[in-house]
Image (cartoon, rainbow, N blue to C red; front, side):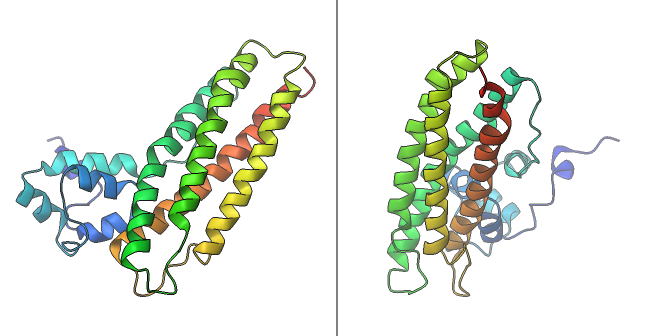
Length: 225
């Protein structure tokens, strides 16, 4: 007999909803969409929380499973590599940063008197989001179309500009580490704080890999065009 969808899921049902929210980036937004309380009700098993709200457990577990990070496999062919960057990094940054900003605002507000609270993090993340939106638009509207067309004698100039902006992204990541003590949670951290730092760690890893693929894999293909 084939396994049911719930049986095929990775065992979220018996985990406390707060623990899932704290460990799995993106889970807080999912829980908010389904109106599941991961803060005050964080000790409740996912199965019980879903039942109380009338949310289908199998569907919920599948949505959570889809959030689990997969090892990115960058294709070799240039068009496919650009598509990979767009889908795996550009789209993911756009989707995840608003939730990180929301969590940062909450943590800063609730824990404003805690010296370990990351004061100024929400503002920094808003700056990062604005800079990434502008940066990615330049790549999507100018640089990547030139690359898909085979290059251009002047392509070295937008590539140089993107490399400079990548340096700025790196400086922003360094500032995140300063504000969060290297993304280290204090013992008193609540579920929202834990979810924030889990998401920040993922974002930092994603952005680092994103910049690496562009600087060290994609851009050098056009250095001599």
